[in-house]
Image (cartoon, rainbow, N blue to C red; front, side):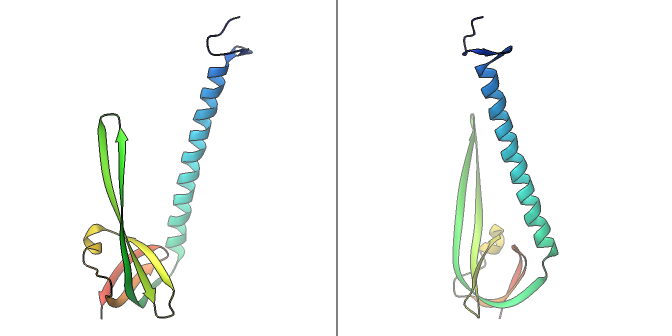
Length: 123
């Protein structure tokens, strides 16, 4: 029997097989992303809330644009790098309103839980 998409495999064309494989791979990517997000959320929830003296040593923005047909959406992610007294650094994601209040060189107390930013108070 002739198939316009390739050779048939027991009633399935090569196109059907490839289509199923692509959907299965997409499903695996989505599920693994959800599992990874849940693990990070759970790890943050089980981490202690800490308040430590820090210095703001860096700021950056990550601007992302997503296109879906005629619709384009934009989103900006804000990150600040804090340095503790031992010299170790950590980068945390913040909301835009908190990001705008911080300046490199600011000193204060950072409150965080795992990778979750909870606040900064200047000293």
